[in-house]
Every structure is written in structure tokens, then in C-alpha cells.
Length: 223
Image (cartoon, rainbow, N blue to C red):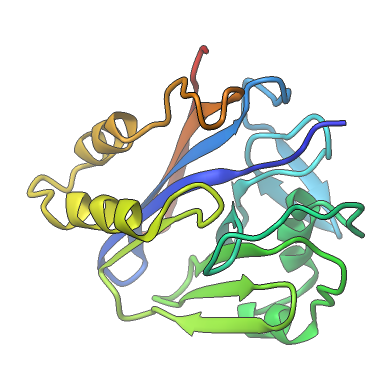
């Protein structure tokens, strides 16, 4: 049985409404298999495009006709892993596709016996950017629609001081091109370490929307 970490660093730059660059490091067990590409699949009657976690058959990041979404392990604080859980978070993230709006999803989703997570959701047709944090007790909704920069690091792996280092690194970035952002995420990637011997950055994914055009860049990291 694999333990799902999804310990990530996510950055979102959005200088103009509807235009954004979302980049995510996936820090995961190097033993956990995932796809090497990002197929378009269908669930709940709607199509989505993103890499596939081959254990849960879910995902950690994707885009649809209306939304872009990614998920991190943990809420605001570190937590204890206490399985069994009712559903993988890699499938919880796809529950959004049942709904026509982010708020409908947040209001309706039943998270009883789901491991804590932070889910970042963007509406492709507006400047709406919202975060759902589940701490195993209650939902927390954050509306960051007016923010030009969002940076989140997984609480399961990174301390508050490390999170601040990540945030400052992105705030200090003068060249906000997709390549410069990608290079910074690559610089921050998790390498082999003693604290988590089997956990490293296994991929970097970047989703860029300009006007009505969207593209996804998925780069598995060979460990």
C-alpha cells in the first residue's frame, strides 16, 4: 500500500484577469507510479486534461473547459496520517466536475473521513481564484480573486519558515515569464533527503492561460 503525500509547492501569477501561470511541484513517494503524459479523460460527464496517478486513477492537477485545479496534502498545519480514508484526494479533486461553480462545489462536497488537503481552484472565464482548506474538522474558504501572486507550500512537509522562504523567492522574481517561474520551481524542488528517504519532487507541471488559449506543460523528473 502506497501512502499518498502530494507534498507540493504551487505558485500562481496573474497580472491580468483571466490570464495566469500556475506552476506546481509534486513531491511524492518515488515508488508511487504515475503517467508520463497528460491525457484528456472524462468523468461525471465532463472532460479534463492532466497527469494520472496510477494508484488512485485520480490526479493532482488538471484543467477543464471552465476550471483549473490543483491539490496539496494537508491544511494549515501538519497532521497525522490515519487511514483508511473514504476517498483518495486524487479523486476528491475531480468532484469539482460535478458542479457548475466553485462555490457550489465547496458548499456541497462531503469531506467526512477525507484526509486534510488544500485545493486551489481557478475559473477560466473570470478572475475567480478560490482555495478550499479541509482540516479534517471543517472547511475553510479563501477568496483570493484579487491577488496577483499566490504561493502555497504543503504543511505536511514544509515548516512555516520554509514556506516564507518560498513566498519571498517568488515575490522577488523580477522576470515573470513562464520559463523564469519554471526555473525557480525547479530550483526549489525536493531532492533526496534523510528526513523523507523515498519522497522527492517527481514532476513539475505548468498551466498557462492567455485569453482563451490554455496549454499544459508536464515534466516528470527522473529520480
